[in-house]
Image (cartoon, rainbow, N blue to C red):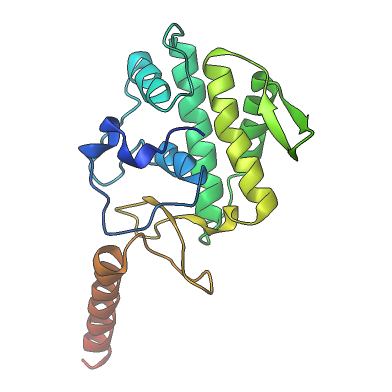
Length: 207
């Protein structure tokens, strides 16, 4: 496999890494999931979750982890494993084959988070984690994933088709046809590659 809370788009942790193009954020809490998926930058090799301390900071800045809670090396391993499983599923939304182990990783994370239904007298039922610490924090991410699947917005969260990019983006097109995080950058690069490939093929066939 590859890789609410306070809105992540405005956090200090993300300001140094510009989006690969002008894109609208994902709707509501799904933007937090998109930010989690983009903690790895395939193009530059930057890993925001580089160690347990970085993971703790990332989660705490988004009100997913208390100030007195810490992250251990095992928590980092589980967080990255979950991120990559989610990236595989989001890639599947854009035509990639789904890694057979992705859903099992999500099941394991949900079990550790003790995700369960929560009923309210003044609103619809929801799924919430009962665990604390990093397991509970990752459970809150999964709860957003579950809700987006139920309401139908999940299928619009995609991974850019460009192999050098693989940035997570939300497809706002009316017919769900978006393939690249930004047409001006990744889309145009792909068009240039396709044109050059066709030109080389035509040149060889004309010899």
